[in-house]
Length: 108
Image (cartoon, rainbow, N blue to C red):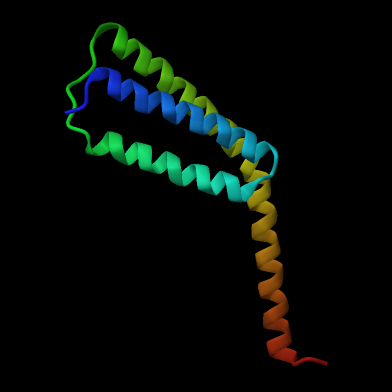
């Protein structure tokens, strides 16, 4: 069973990771972003698997503040990655259309 301090430590580690994810997304470093996302998922899995009692008092308030920060960072990451994802989707669609045209009309 994880103690309240251990739980908060995992949440704080998540904040540190999401802050790094914001920086990676802002720099267009998609490989680093993916690596950090994997690390983040491992921390979340740890929390899901932990046998924990609900936090009380100041620990509960600190957890709530951390979750708000995580949500804010998630929004920033989405704001930074959405244009890139749209561009990537357009490139994939364009390449698919080119392949279909080449298949339909042959390589002339």
